[in-house]
Amino acid sequence: MAEAYDPNNVFAKILRGELPCKKVHETRHCLAFHDINPLAPIHVLVIPKGAYVSMEDFSAKASAEEQADFIQAIGETARIVGAVAGGYRILANSGANANQEVPHLHMHIFGGRYLGRMLKKEGE
Ligand code: AMP
Image (tube, rainbow, N blue to C red; front, top):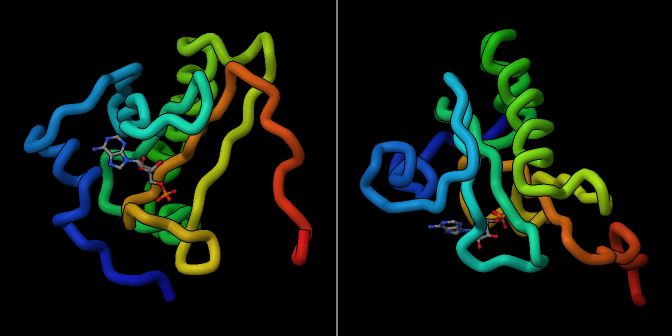
């Protein structure tokens, strides 16, 4: 079972307007903004506005409208930031093995440079 949602996480604060963000795109159910510590020339985050920890939490609890909005917001954000032509990667970390730092579902969009293979093999 997914961990309980912590309303004091940093993205919940951004959604409540308690912390600033560099907004890229907003829909009824989602917000997209630049990552504060970019790992690529293009590095943006797309988050649902609802209180969901991870993708499986979101897929189990969010309405069909929220889920459709999230998928559309990710694609539209990739277009807005100019990631499409050169190619891009989307990635969502969930839980300890994935080193999820912020416990509010977020999709990273990386682009603007060659991103290499998706993951190192064990021992590499
Ligand atoms: P993850 O490891 O997938 O949980 O990634 C969390 C991401 O959130 C990291 O890439 C951080 O740089 C980013 N981050 C943390 N705080 C902020 C913030 N206030 N505004 C924008 N991005 C943030």
